Image 1 (cartoon, rainbow, N blue to C red):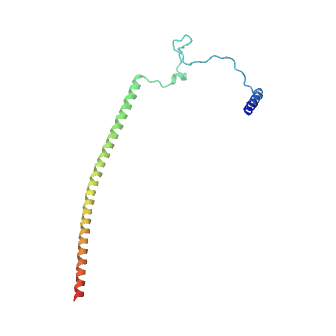
Image 2 (image 1 turned 180 degrees about the horizontal axis):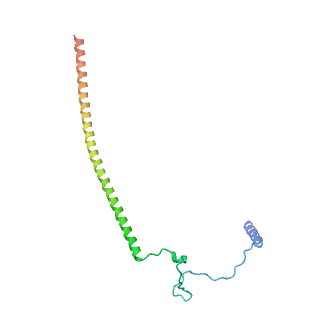
Image 3 (image 1 turned 60 degrees about the horizontal axis):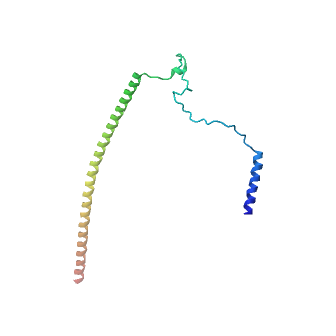
Length: 147
């Protein structure tokens, strides 16, 4: 315990010497800024209705009338409809291509099965033929040796 108390007293002395060297300036008391949002009907809000002449940059912002907005909306809808039609046509082309590929695959698969069965039958007949030839050769040798 003596070591811990001596360590803490050293730390306190260091803190005192550091605080005498570098002290932050004290801040005076200040009020909280609170919320920045102020309701419109607050008595502290002043709304100024200012008029600007046509050369003022603030009047040059792109403001559109309801007719212009409606026209832009119609153009956007028309562009979306055209894009949807193009995508549908593209999708139909893809579906048609898939059908063609599927039918080609079925034809090739049928041809493959036919070739497999044909090769299997050839292998069976070659086994039968080779085993029959081996038997006849074996019998022939026996006859030759018997004579």
